[in-house]
Image 1 (cartoon, rainbow, N blue to C red):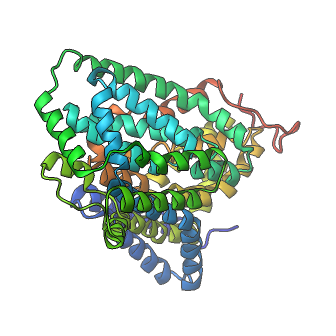
Image 2 (cartoon, rainbow, N blue to C red; image 1 turned 30 degrees about the vertical axis):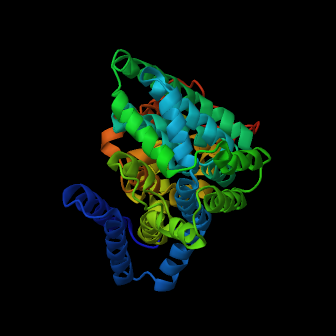
Length: 468
């Protein structure tokens, strides 16, 4: 397929896109959604000026948004679940007993492992961050552990679980879009993911040493415990919603119906155990828990959630489609692929080019739902040409998409994490080494050939382009 616009015009589009995104977000610090829409509008205007048909641009925008509909529905469900689980006492229950049972010295280590296990079981890092993660942030406040440490531990655990869970939408998308068996993809991910997790866990144990001899303010802890106990009925039955969700997920039930069950049980328990009216339940589902507990720190812990809390993140998803789709319509992707074919003489240089290409586009667009769908169908055949297994590509997608997302403030995942945990991305990312070490290990493997799988085909399409 020949590019619709010339190389020169596509380069201009790319420069305009980069200038608007980085200038708008890093320079004038404008909201990410507005910056992406502005960038998309500029690209669309130039494309129309140079002869691209609006119908073609509209088709690609709608196609991109179509890929995002399930993630959008999941985001909205997670927002409602956070709000109703606050009202039902589920998350306050976790905070209460977390403060009693967890010691400051091992808190970060345990937090990371808990989030990893939770996401491995439910396949959704957003759900883990929005429920267990929010509860752990509350425990962190009570234990007087800096929130950026806890946010990092929560994110590392959640992203690790998301990458290696066969229930994860990003894992399924990366494998299916490249025609790779799901479990082959998951196993191949372990090469770049496990080392980063181990290094992160060691870091959390080291950081925990500084809290080993600290005396936690017992009066502050007591005040928090008393406030939670006064405002919520902390009956163990309030844990029925997450228990039901875990059981259903373990039976491989679809995510959205499972979250629907969690929301329904939270609403019922809120009505019966917390003596809330139907209107109060509806308000929690819409706008989150908003009642004054009488203690500021507890208010910070529990006044969260609701469908409305996710609308800004949903807007970023839609803005990403508006921004990214016209770059595909213009033919820029095809030009990039032609350049890779022209200059990549070996499998190593081709894989390095693909890794760089996807990292760059993901950093600009901020949505792996867009970049996986755009690059997957066209790059997978390139790996066949070089006699390389496509699971190398699916792993590259996750290393430079799923894992990298928390590092990019204007990405959908990055914005969700910052909004939900209430910690800016730049503050916690230094303490989340797994997020960026995946790329480091990927580069090492490309250079050395270790962990690189050859194609299952006996005769590659182009025998002159082998990895070695």
